[in-house]
Length: 78
Image (tube, rainbow, N blue to C red; front, side):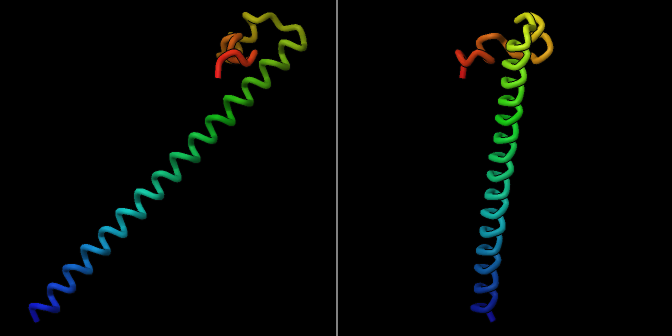
């Protein structure tokens, strides 16, 4: 009986460890997806700002409407 109880305890530790590893993996994946979405949004804003400039909008107007600095949409800042 003691051996069986010890095996169950070890199995429980292993299961807990697997659950924790899975939780961390899911969290990491969610973080990567969120970062990708944010990069996509920033790129969309940059493209919008570039398009506004091509249409003749003043830099100040583009900056106010997009929240980007001229350096950000002109590609001088990563």
